Length: 145
Length: 145
Image 1 (cartoon, helix red, strand yellow):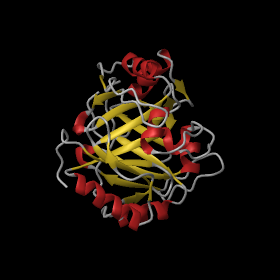
Image 2 (cartoon, rainbow over the protein chains, first blue to last red; image 1 turned 120 degrees about the vertical axis):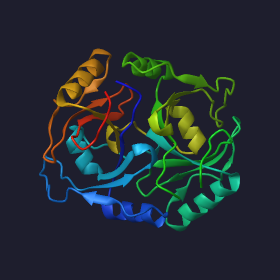
Image 3 (cartoon, chains in turn purple, red; image 1 turned 60 degrees about the vertical axis):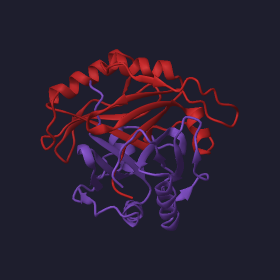
Image 4 (cartoon, chains in turn red, orange; image 1 turned 90 degrees about the vertical axis):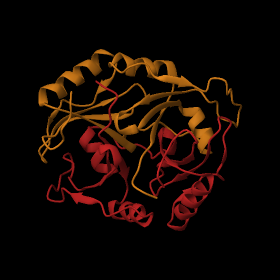
């Protein structure tokens, strides 16, 4: 196995609402596929939303109940602190701007953005399903805002 | 905000054990940095492991307790079904081979790999901290094993 990631799938409570949240942030329409696979009590339904990301990565939104069935695991209690996603931007001002936008469309800021001891300026938010994103200004990461 | 992901950080119980697990899977040594930031009851410690992934993505392992402090959120009960990571390979046999390797180094297979109704062959595993990976053969995704 190599250090490679092709897909990241976030478990969501309501696919339409989650899609709406990300699109309200300015993301382009997702590719929503698989609605023909209706599933059952034990078989997962197929409906999933895919966003194509730079570098070939696929970002997917999939109902929590169906991910649990697909992976053959029980659904647990949602928990924000199992992972975070990092979104790098080009300036501290852009961190503030992104977080203001997030708040405006219904995301939850967990703190005021601030300088971290290791020299980055960042703030976290939770999406509608409690998934953490960190919006980061790190002078060492070049990005195009 | 754009559909872009620069970093994915997994919360882990024991950083050294988690690192060891991924390196036993065949990943190259990680860049472990930030040990000089010792943290406190409220400030997160800085020690983190970074793996560079194709496409510029950074894959990070960071203690659960410190991620919670960094994001200003309480630690919750670990829960496998909040997200999954997809690792695409070039054949069904390679799915089986990767999962056998995972099992050999202490990961947990959640089911036998099988064909999904939507035409992919895959199986899931949990890493030492219960994070789900799906090892996928999808004829529509080209990868170099």
